[in-house]
Image (cartoon, rainbow, N blue to C red; front, side, top):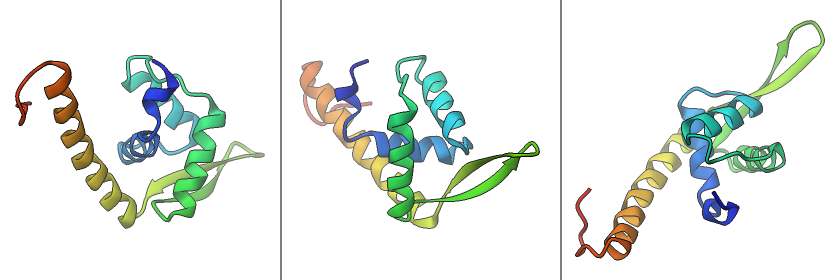
Length: 113
């Protein structure tokens, strides 16, 4: 899938993935890949800056956890603001998808799901 398709949707995808239980960057990346049937194979150079941006916006919170004796990783969870933002983005996505489907599939608006 082309990267342009994800523009404007990455934050919602990340919030949904964190909400579903994936906690750290690589697990989030792997969950996006697996849950999309391999269509979203995003580089870590895309994932981490977006996670940092969501953290600065107060939508997720990160904490360092120890893995093994020397390694640490940053784990993320949704904040209450992140849960609200995800709910709003899900509603917005459903409306957008219905409108696009109505046009592309030549169905009258409002399109039925």
